[in-house]
Image (cartoon, rainbow, N blue to C red; front, top):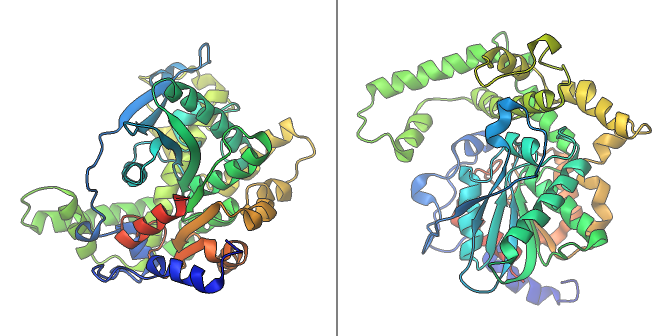
Length: 422
């Protein structure tokens, strides 16, 4: 692209930089509100011919799986295949998300409509992936997670290649999945398992540690004051219940849920709490899963094993919810990585989970692009400078949308499609 004259490049990018004339403006300039509420139903992108995805599974024979997780022994993934030859796009979920979550289901349709076979994978931090596919069972260290993803993607390719003509490979991911996509692309330049044609990062963090500690900070007294997280959540439920009781409910659908949330007067402090709590739910599930898999005795004491499907899990869930990512890092993840790599130190571990670690590759690889928002709540000013400096005109950053809040907004969808087209 550097060889394209600047004027031609500007003309090519104009349709991406400006919403089409018929597109109403994105309604939220508050990034916290955008993150929580997302794109209003009436503004969302509509698919011409939505496809019905399939759910497939891969099983590692003789893998040791605790009885508690027996139902999750298989690694599940979603596919949406074209009827004829097409490139295969791997789609990687964000923190704690499953292959068929709402955002993944939407993105699966986006890239299928763009002409790809699509294989959507859960995040390596999701319970099913940890149980069925993780080599170590300790998620959160990006190099290990990327090795797991690369291996899982080769399994998926083997499952699909027998029945479908695959003409090439691309990879995309949102949030943490976007960071994983970047590392997968860098890894692939050395391994050549896929030789990706295009790599799309959607709302990526720049540093995993920086972003998650920002989310965790919203569950501290700095944001909550004298209230606890549980008290805040109970307060939110009471306010939503009061609205529900007074509303004229005809159909408990997405539109009603959206109206209910938007009409309850949440302040930024409340929205930060909701965003932080959503992340903490994901991270606590990840921590509990790892602890049980390894019988690491981090949450579950040795006398409580073996856990059965009938075992009450609420006490462990409550305990896990109180663990910040930084605590998990210092007390669990770092000691585990140091067990395998004795020379590892904290600073190196953090750098190895940051895009800064692969800056030269990202700066020089024209096939990697970014679609995101300048007011993304998981980014700091230094992160935005990194994206601008490293990606230049390969970063399409909208002014507003928060973290994935405008994912379903038509101009954002068109930018994502442009990012994966040759």
